[in-house]
Image (cartoon, rainbow, N blue to C red; front, side, top):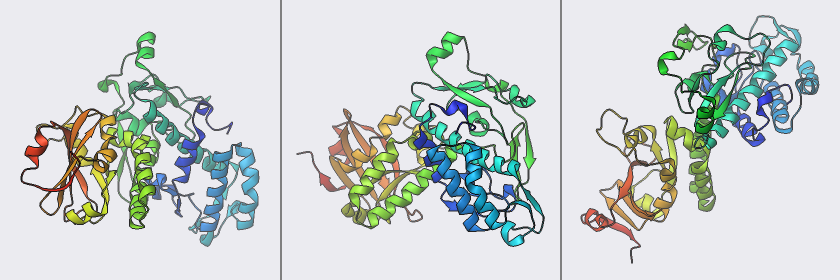
Length: 409
C-alpha cells in the first residue's frame, strides 16, 4: 500500500487485517453520519450504497488490498467492473441503488475517499494494537506533522504534543483526524524523551475547544475543534472493544457446545492480547477473565460459564471509584493476566450462599483471592473482587463456607 501510510512500514500486517475484518457487518447508509465513531469498528459502510451485494464487493476488494498489498490505482482497476455493472459510476440517479432520490456523482475522487479512509482507519487501529503491546517500553506518544503539502493550521498547533499512551487526549486526537488527514505520531521511550529534552505536555496546554455536530441520528455530539465529525474517536480503542465483545460471544458459544479446550485457548489469547491492555487503560463494558467448570456453574446457578470483569468493578479495583475509599491499585496488568489460571487451578473453591464462589489460588509466588457472583440482572457471572491474600487466612476465611474444591493436600 505504497500510497497509504508511509510510516506503517514497521506495522504488523496481521494487526491491520484483523482491524478491517472485525467489521464483518454490512450496513447500508445514505448519509455518512448515519454511522459514527465506534460503530465503524463493527460494521462496514459506504455512504450512498444501499445494495448489500455492492457493499460486499467493495468490502472484499478493500480487504484484499489491505491483506495482500497494492496501490489505489490497482484497487480501482479491480473494482471498476463491479461498479460499472451495478451502475454505481458517473452521475447516478437510482434510489434503489443509492438510498436517495438525489443524483450523486461517483468518480475517482469519491473512490479515493472510500479507499483512503478505510485503509487509514484500519491502519490506525493496527497501530493502536501495537502501541498497547509496547507501552511498557515506549510509554509515550508524540504528535508528528502531516506529510501533506498543505497542512491544516489547527493541526499544526498539535505538532510536538507528548503524552502518555493512555492519556484521554489520544481517545479523540489520535490520527487521522479528518478526511485526507496525514498527521501521524511516534511512540517514545522514557530514555528518548530525556535524551531529546522533551517534556510531557501539561493538560492546560492541550486543545480545549469543541463544537456541536448533529449526525443523521439526530442526537447532537461534541466534536473537538480541528477534527472532522466522524473522526473524533480512537479507531484502535473501538476495534479492541469490538474484539472483546465478539470474544465473549464466541466463548459462550464454545462452552455451550462443549468445546472447553477451544474456549480455554481463546480466553488465554484474549487475556494476553492488546485488547486487555486497552480495557485496563480505558475500562468499558466487560472483559472475559475466566471460565467456570460445569459443577461450579451449577453450584452458583450461573447463566453462563464465562466470567467477566465489568468496567465498574475494575475501576473499584483500581481505587478511582468515588463510592469506595480503597481498592487494589498495586495490582499490575500481569497480575490480572493470572485470572484464568487462578480460577482454573484454585487450591480452594468455596461457596457463599447460592450465587457466590470464592477462589483461593497459589500463583506467581502469592496466594490470591477472587470472588465471583451471579446477580439476578446479569447475563454473565462477574468477578467482583480480586487481590492478594495471606496463606494463613484461607482456613479462617472458609470456616463458615461450603468447600467445593480443596487441593491443599
